[in-house]
Amino acid sequence: MKKAVCIILALAVLMTCCVIGVSAKCTISDELRGQMDAAADDVTIRVNIWVNSVTMTEDELHQRAMTDAGFKNWEFDKLTSAQMNQYISARRKIESSLEQESCQRFIESFGLEEESINYTIATCINANLTKAQIEAAMDHPLVNAIYYDSQGELPNAMPTESASSYRSKFEDYCDRQFFGAEVLRYKELYQHKDKNGETDWVLINGFTNGEIPALLNTIIGNRVILLGSCGIPFDSNYGVYDVKNDTFVDAQSAAHGGYADFVKVFDELGGGRLIGDLDRDNELSVIDVTIIQRCEVNIREYPADNEIKADDGLWRYSVKYYSDFDRDGERTILDATRLQRYLIS
Image 1 (tube, rainbow, N blue to C red):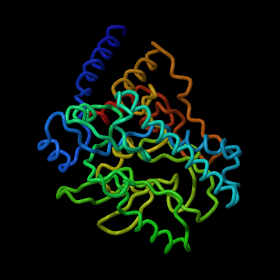
Image 2 (cartoon, rainbow, N blue to C red; image 1 turned 135 degrees about the vertical axis):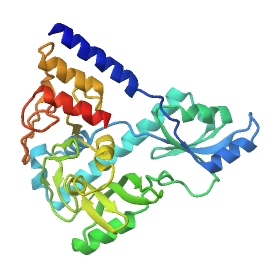
Image 3 (cartoon, one colour; image 1 turned 30 degrees about the horizontal axis):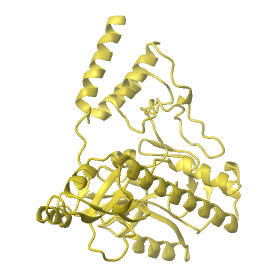
């Protein structure tokens, strides 16, 4: 048995080495690349640096907003419209604080001098950088994208595929289908391209004031969304805009609706916690496979947070553990096998 376990662990290490790759540089616009090619080495270029928001899961953001607004989590489905506005206001303050923190973290870790910064807005830093500094910033883990600034209007969204180019359609849809419901949140997390390079579907996180939301714990793809809302227009606030058919689809339906790559995209970008993510790094990897294997042969104990505790909300699934990747309601070595196959595919 010990020999078999050693072989399994050795294979796991090898798979880890194969999975780990070289991270790509961030997005850089063609216009900025042209400016860099034309500029001398000591000349500075005015750029917009878009940084990642400090990580906070949707569950953590919800709980923090409820606390800051003065409510208990179990009261969420009982909030009045006025109280809901308090909750939304608290969320926006937290998000704004996280955005400022992201900018400050980049400025400090990159060593960006104060005199080179023109302004910061949301998660965008406008600064004057040399070509060498731009190249270095492209490799920085906090940077999403860098764009040349022609000193026009202040940016309000990162000008990439994740920009909110379909917000007006979302607003029109909610207005028509839900009796004038006002959009309180809209964010595009990802735009998927078909084989011709055209956008065919968009992953959206958004909700309205159309009704007082009830708590609805759910599973979308491989993610468990606890204390999500049963609101308008999407359960747990995640959905898809089907560009080809000009319609909106709930994310849970999209997971089974033939949208190419949807589950893997949602696994990477959605909220909640991944089924199979035993090391809590927000990714599925061979390390999680190894943990399940070691637990099943009694080399170690399952993590204390392995049990799914769907308190104060409807839970309609047989899944009881985050290690239950095959969702049969049990913890077995088959979960490691299925997770391994998923990673390979």
